[in-house]
Length: 122
Image 1 (cartoon, helix red, strand yellow):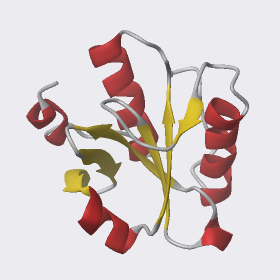
Image 2: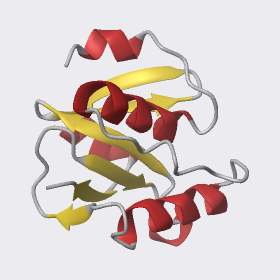
Image 3: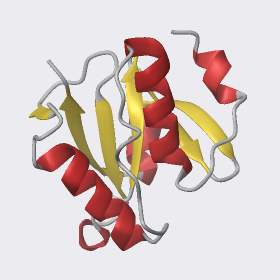
Image 4: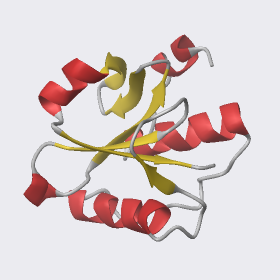
């Protein structure tokens, strides 16, 4: 995967989930575009993650150690729930923000988002 291709792209809200969908479609040939949010509130984004990942209907399973293309769920505070995500690749996480996409190492990402979960497809 050429990370620079994704760093220059802009995504509609929620940009983090749209970036994950774009990476899965382009790099793995797998669709995740069926996971739509009704609106872009934190609560709705968290509900989308629950439906797309936690219920297992789309083949995602929680893993302890991320590998390339693992979806990384992120949260700043436990009470807020999972409200941001990215894609693990080569030891870093590619994630979309409203003001642009970032490719960030796990340590610095953990400073902002201390809560992390990893979800992959076998």
